[in-house]
Image 1 (cartoon, rainbow, N blue to C red):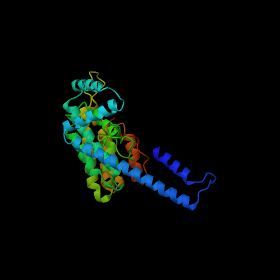
Image 2 (cartoon, rainbow, N blue to C red; image 1 turned 135 degrees about the vertical axis):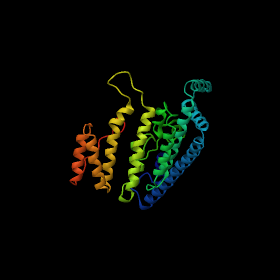
Image 3 (spheres, rainbow, N blue to C red; image 1 turned 90 degrees about the horizontal axis):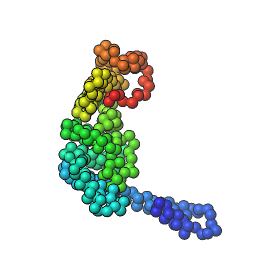
Image 4 (spheres, helix red, strand yellow; image 1 turned 45 degrees about the vertical axis):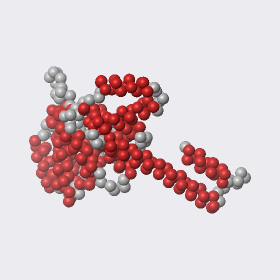
Length: 310
């Protein structure tokens, strides 16, 4: 709004009161002024990003560093910015230490910072930059700590730019088209970052390997974090349901992807075997329709939401 007001004042000073139309000189001066404003804005944003990145990288260095940064950010946005008393923050910090400050909580903050830093870097990168390997590294780290992180899904599910860190450093208005909000949204991470570079005939083995890893990781998260179930006879744990249903849907989707990207013969044979072994599966009618369409050279309709976690 300050830039807009500045431009209006500039235009008012530039034109005589009785003159309403722009001359060529006026146009050139206005465009030059616009470029100055744009450059100033770009410089301000870049400076803010660099400050935030430096803080986030320092914070992700250890669990205690992540927690210290978290406390500083909470103090800023929940207390200082709202002109609340210092004593109120001390009271909150005491309650936090007693109720929520655990090793698992601190570890989750560290992983959250890791993904936020990568996300922020992506906002400044060129469109063709490939973040697949780094996204894979973040996801792998979380999976390695899955047992330790049980109960911290809410933190890990929080959208990167809506975290307390992003708000404190005023980067919460940033967006990236098609970028996964969180590292544990495996469907979005793989579909958005990991699979696309592998969808060609030369990379078919790597594409299949990535699919199998994604399926394995879905299972690990559900096994480690799912509710244990109840005593009701007709209810089973989420992981067991996923093994029966969601995993088999993902295996089918893998073969469809491989078929579409060059492995038609191999994928078709495996799809038939999959159908033979799982004719009682609730998705079998859909699989049959898709198989027929693919073999006949047709185009599949857009897929429904990923059934991985159903």
